[in-house]
Image 1 (cartoon, rainbow, N blue to C red):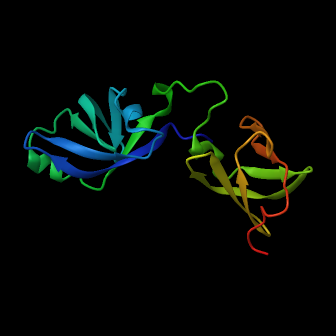
Image 2 (cartoon, rainbow, N blue to C red):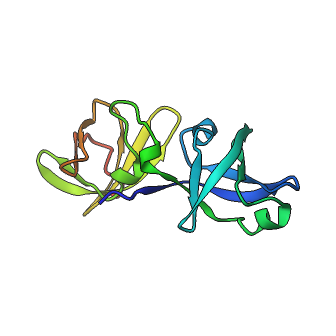
Length: 164
């Protein structure tokens, strides 16, 4: 079952004295986080009053967090976004929805997706089963991603198995 809340980053520090927090985003880009009007921390929904990018992080002012002392209490908390607040491009999906999916090669299950590495050239599926595999997420090797049916079909070549 897909979770309604998705991990989007972590509060790593405070910023200034008026309650802003510094968020290290776990998204494709820091700009992605600036479009949300609400986030969740520890299951509590909080309104985002303002948000801006600073380098690789996001400075966020949350409603009710009005001074540095209140902001300090939020350090190390995970920032979650609501799935329904995100509009994905066609063919895109959340990494959280891929983790744990069975991976098939020639209609045989070879394992499940344990991790998705986001590398500069393309993502790589880390698959664990009887063997470990690293599969580049490119059309040549990933034949089908079917979230509704719950599987990923791939074409393996020599060198993808990493535990030989």
